[in-house]
Image (cartoon, rainbow, N blue to C red; front, top):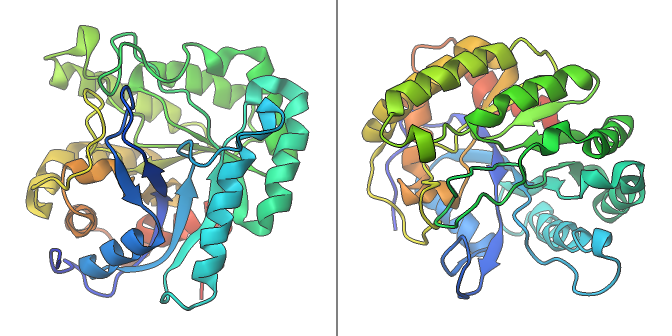
Length: 335
């Protein structure tokens, strides 16, 4: 099935935020049953017509080991994704290098005891393994149709978590953080406490839309923007501009939403422009966040929306937003 024609044909893209998963149909999950593995990903990219050269896998709780110590079970996800990355690197499946870099998971609340977990990730995936993410996003009003967020309040302030984060920095790994905008104050404090740690804020620090913010979209955006500008003053933080297509108020769907790129660009432009102005293209990168973001529109429509919004940028800035910043953060060599 064909997607929208590319708005800017030939624009080389590194997608720094893609998941791979097979979700079984079980009650109470945050996602509907769906399969998104190498064949589905490659078909999606081909249909979009976008020139995606590399992708970065970001943890999503897949294929954890069922045996062994609890703290090492997360390594199963890296083993699973590294296999797909090896398939892609063979060249047998086309030029796009899928899961060229891997952001896995580990419980930083282990403190210094997280080191062997991280070292095992690195042993399993070598240079592909570039960092971790763990559940942090939290809303007392619930998320994805569940009564509470999947993260924990205050984890960024936890001394044990910070001790574990120091190990990440020592190993020259980065930390992806997905939090809601109401948690950005904690992230600012965390970034100040660990200036040597490379931190990547996912999904623009998703504006809260539930609880006291329900029905107050303009107020939420103003509060979010003020916090984003303050966070951008921390030079060790980079931002992923995306994740605006998912709806945290309901379970992640399996169907592709109907919105085209013009509609998406209209909705997203105020958020995207705020992020780019605050962080500059040197510390900002576009992300697809697929499959979650497909509930709004297709893969091609998503990248076309970003291309529409960035149309007035210089070629140098576009190159940074669409691939070079991601390449620097995740150590991806460019031609």
